Image 1: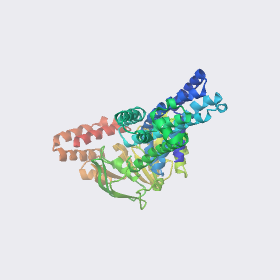
Image 2: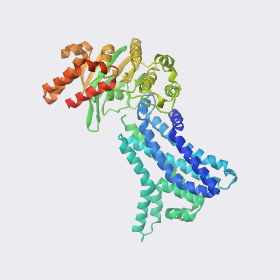
Image 3: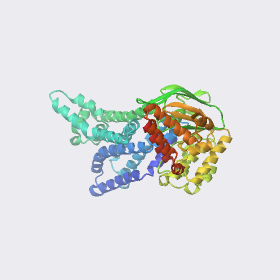
Image 4: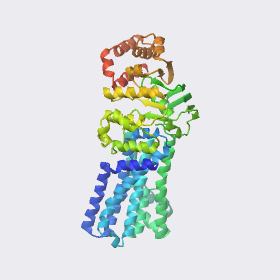
Length: 260
Length: 281
């Protein structure tokens, strides 16, 4: 797996798309820092970008990469290595190349701006961790979709729909549920529902850490009320890690039974 | 070395292999696996490599069942049908990649010279032409000295010089006692290279034997006509439109221009067989 990972990363960090993604984060962070000058405000602005954009880009990259490397994967499958190591190697190579773009694109300008001297270092850290986790989760889901669908158009469509579902539709449905059942105590339901959406979970995590109750939204407030900040952050982080494991496990199951 | 027993495979509801039993034991022999598109050639080869999982049946390589195994694959060299590689890797890095995965002795230096790839080693694979990619594909397939060699459409996109080199290379490997399986649509290549033909038709083995046996069996003088006649005969059985199919067969196979153009161009071959398959279904 390590070897496949290494060469996948080699290939991807030199791809035009990765460089473009890196350039985008660099530019955005520099502009935000230059205009606002307040590290804490810049982190909040970047949070919104990371929560929506990282999953979207990871989804697109994941599905594109999986389809583009289809023929080469056949060559790898004919080598004396187990299937799981091929697909996990490719998946982590993809996730890490995306993560590097985020780390360097956001981290670079912050470092230059004197991050270590400010008190925001942990908030910055949480922002990066969330960017990385979301990239892994959504590229994994996209990889899985591509693996299960031979038809590329269908695969692309499903992948984008998955992103749309978690980024937009899920919250809408949740809100609708809250409105319909507003007579009942809904906190436990809202709490458990938010565990099933990695984007919601990330939002809660970052808001708990930043401790901005005004921006917390319904689920965030519930989370804090019920669990307190420390426990809330631990649970959110733990479940997010589970979300990373889920596509990895599913990729293994699907790959084991697939004909190439 | 390879034994296949009652191999069944269907993709969804579409049966591709319907109980194929084959043994390849004699080393130093080139077997051409022929058949129209969709007859199950590639599926058969991929099943041997463990890329396609059989519904029923058993495959043994060097006496051991391959089910759930992968180590046996270092006894097989495989040339995939389509040469597509990670676009941002250089040729040199790709060779190092495969070497990293398989370890062991390689002989890529001689192969790089043979196919004239020296000048391309530091180019990115995304910038190479189709023919050059196929040469890289050949280097990757031949750089290990494994006793079994499986080649899926080895000639596609090659220029005449590379084609000659490839033929010499395959003959040399044969002399060194390797078991070689080739699928191709190019009849001249088969005539020149194959010791034995396995002809697949709709998921069954229609014929196995030497070229002469095939010609004698269908009563034709050339291999091309023999194959045309098999496919033509199948059409008659299925549709009962003898006049239409024989007309087709003549026009396609009797035309000298067609034969010339086809040489070295796999796509032509594909198109031709494609028509036949559609006709026969």
